[in-house]
Image (cartoon, rainbow, N blue to C red):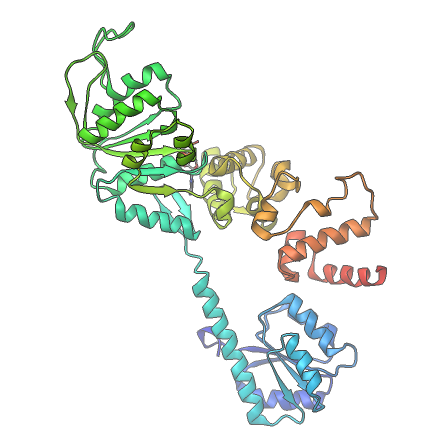
Length: 467
Ligand SMILES: Nc1ncnc2c1ncn2[C@@H]1O[C@H](COP(=O)(O)OP(=O)(O)OP(=O)(O)O)[C@@H](O)[C@H]1O
């Protein structure tokens, strides 16, 4: 029996009514039984209602049973299909098994053998569904303002949870907009310093000549314009966390002063001759490759190794595309509230486009796109037509399709080389690309193309005629 002890729904595809009635009597109270006599009705049923198992007579009047099996497999790779053959034709059975039939029965079908075969197939399906549920747990986590379900991000959350408790320094790398600052805050709030100050200093945003004073403070008269004593970030972070964002932008000379500060936990404010001792935890971030920056002489090697006790490397959004719909949903709800709009969901097509885009600006770009859509449109559904053109047009620069689905988009864009092709051929190429992307699942393909599955079947039949 299936989940919740529900009875399985079995579709009998058999042109002989008496035989179908015999099968129905075998199944009696064990299953919900549906019966069709023709191949095309079988496909129609499969498309329109949930079916758990198909009993397929291979000798149907309107369709070749093997061809029907192939079409069923295009539609649904998992559903158990037991073929029933009247002949002791081992080569037919072999071909059917190659077309991924689950099992076979030979007419005349004996009751015990029939029930064992059906039960086995149902159990296999159940097991497969359970395994899928385990291997794709689809659990997501919300961690200090970040949502994620991708394995690398969940692992990083775990590293933060474990290592934040110590005073070890974190070194966070990731492209711009991947969430480095959020990670830094997460480390602070997971640590025992959570009720103490979190002081962030962005080394890229402060003019070089002012950085030392920003970091260590200065005394009155230390330089022109220093009209009073000023406390630096190091002092303000005492007993808490000091976050040095864009560390790679810190001038090289200042890096040696920082190294000394890290080693001794003491510093000298600009213009002072007195050292100050503090207790701080260090977190650094950069969007550059630190080893490359070391090679180029932009980052001191000793400073890097001193700070990089716990490295956190945040993958760009395009490498964890399964997080995109999740983050998009969260942002949509948040922005809708802020803008007083009724948006509450994303259409399946829009979700596919968001998923497939390469997001060079990472989460920050995703937020900007959603904010723009919400500002310019009305809800409740964020639809594909509302998205900016760079997400809709499969441009050569958007490598997302290649990255996530292994599909090349360039070959199928006939405008690229000025070539004009018949409309049906352009449509065929587009549909084939979508089919490939959806692993030849007709239902999924139809959904992203926003047509009905029967339209797809009709088109595929037409191509055969057109060659
Ligand atoms: N996993 C996530 N879930 C939800 N929002 C996120 C996530 N990651 C990042 N954000 C949001 O994306 C934006 C950019 O994040 P953040 O400023 O931390 O990135 P960054 O890597 O520090 O960027 P930069 O290098 O440009 O400073 C922020 O508004 C942040 O709240």
